[in-house]
Length: 205
Image (tube, rainbow, N blue to C red; front, side, top):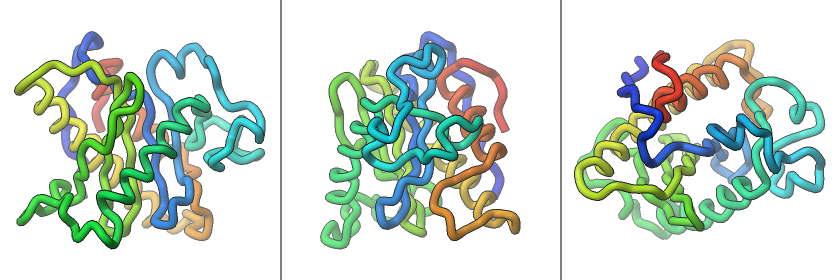
């Protein structure tokens, strides 16, 4: 599946993506990374087992460059809290009411807004193999068509992350027994897409 083009956004654009996470079908952590000011300053990063209550990091992965980039404890809590809402919307008792009737492709996997938390909003995307992709965005919205266009671009971004994940799984060198994603290529692809979304770089895969 080809990656979809993400329109480059100016750095002043509202609704910047600050955290992206992938969570397995049994809610096992697979990937989490912060972007933007938090990543640049390194403030409030997890640096011990006590700062990793949800298992997003391991001793061997904490200090390596790549897929398990450290994330703030606050953002880990936000993602973990949003998972409850994710389960409510998409779980066995939901009856797939979250899915737009007749939707296909990425539209059929787009869950949309899960919940606002503090000054952030969390969006969800559910793959056909029940992998959850969560995006945490700044809650600085502009009304009307601008917000709809931004959410449409976010949907494209999450669909591209899904494609990266499929490519990772299909790689014959991938150890599928490990739930955590350990791949510099996957991580670089995610960073490129998020950078284009946030207006940090013009690079689009």
